[in-house]
Every structure is written in C-alpha cells, then in structure tokens.
Image 1 (cartoon, helix red, strand yellow):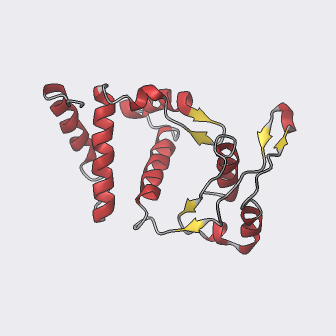
Image 2 (cartoon, one colour; image 1 turned 90 degrees about the vertical axis):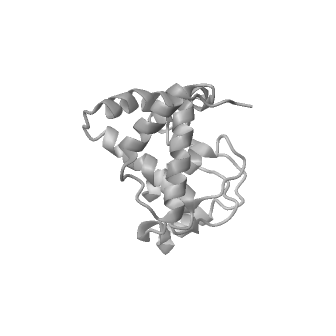
Length: 174
C-alpha cells in the first residue's frame, strides 16, 4: 500500500470511527522516517479538518491510537486476507474476462467508498447460501494462512465443492 492510499483510507475511516489502529505489512515506503512524521502527527488527534479541493469535501485528519504497527503477514492473518482481497480487486479491474471477474466487477462499485470498501449488509446475511459459502471459504483461507499453505491452490475446486454441499445440505442457523 502506498502512503497516499493508506492516508486516504485512514482519513475516510476516521470520519466513522473516533480512533483507529493501523497495522500494516512492513514496507520500505511506509517505514521511511519522513512518512512516520506525517502518520505520527495523527496519534491522539481528535480535531477533524476537511479539504474542499476540487469541489468535494474530503477529510485530511484522523485519530490514530498509536504509531503504525508493522507486523509480518505470516503472523497477522488479517493482513493476508486484506492482501487476498486486494489481489482479487486488481485481477478484476485488470481486464479479466472470466465469469467471476465479471460478477465482482458488478459488486465492487456498489460497496466501494472513497478510500475504502465496506460490505453491503446483504453480503453478510448468513441466511443466504452465497454468504454461507463465502464464510466457509473465508474460514478455509484463514486456516491456510495459519498453516502457511497456498491461498490459491485448489480453491476453484474447493469453492465448487462447498457450493454443491450447501445446495444439498444447507446450514442450520441457531
């Protein structure tokens, strides 16, 4: 992630949350001392300043709970999931023409916000079999990330198997 992308993301999330904790993969651009000054100036910052450049109001401050934490994605599984989602988005918008890319290309603009992607509540309703499938796949990705197994090897077959299984044996929600 670039400094600009991280800053924009945090500034926009800062409009919804009073305090943020930033955990990132180690990267030379983000760990550069010059950039730390900018992000460190947001630690404990409660004022909200907006820019109205180009005719739109955009936040330019946010409140970090502390300095950016740099953690290895091998030990911090949330970063692995974020990397997988980012890679999928890059694939979708890089001209991919398969059915899955077309489906995601239609969904992503509906859940995207300036600087962020937030799920639509319909996409987290566990009564929906597609959501159930996605939850099972997420658990599988977490297991693979935890065990150091490839996140992509055999996934098309796994997703197909889970989809078929849920069609014949739906989850019972308590």
